[in-house]
Amino acid sequence: MSLPVCVFDLDHTLVNSPLDLKAVGREMERLIRARGVTLPARELRWSGAELLAVVRREAPQLETEVMAIPVAHERRAMELAELVPHAMDALRAMKDLGFATAVWTNNDRVVADYVLARFGLAPHLDLVVTRDDVRALKPDPDGLRVIRARWPGAQHVVVVGDSWVDGAAAQAGGVPFIAYRPDHDELARRGVTATAVIGSLLDLPAALA
Image (cartoon, rainbow, N blue to C red; front, top):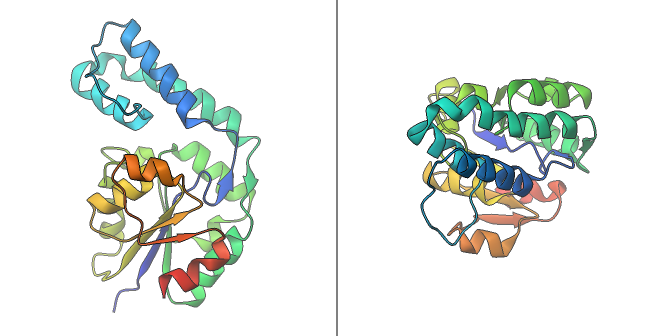
């Protein structure tokens, strides 16, 4: 029988850092517009992942230049990362409950491996899925394809994260989303519904029950 799988986001879920994803998105958007790419009108702000999807579709020649922006922000932020309270406890608790554990992050492999090794989290994870492993970033659910390839018989997969992109990806992939200290207004604006909301990672086992 395949194990159930608990999938964690990385930034602001297992580790905190000064990475400002809104600032990253704004900088990417300015560059894309400056290079003459027309972005569709919309009320909601563009996330970096959504902008990357537009670039890949409309102006693939710009991908390397555009992606240099999040890479630079991520490299600076990883040096200042701190472990989220009870992150290690949560991973150990999931193992004790019989779950396989994974991280699914929009960060690249360099950042993920560095941070997970720095805080000793890597030995408690069975799989790490980064943007280098997927065809599209969250809010696209493609990371779940990678996770299900690792555990093809898994009957239960749950995603734990802080952001609307985590919830949207889980929702699109048909799995439950447990929101950790989310921006409730942003979840509502994006049409994301959390299965449960927790204010501490210590509350995760009870939320799963």
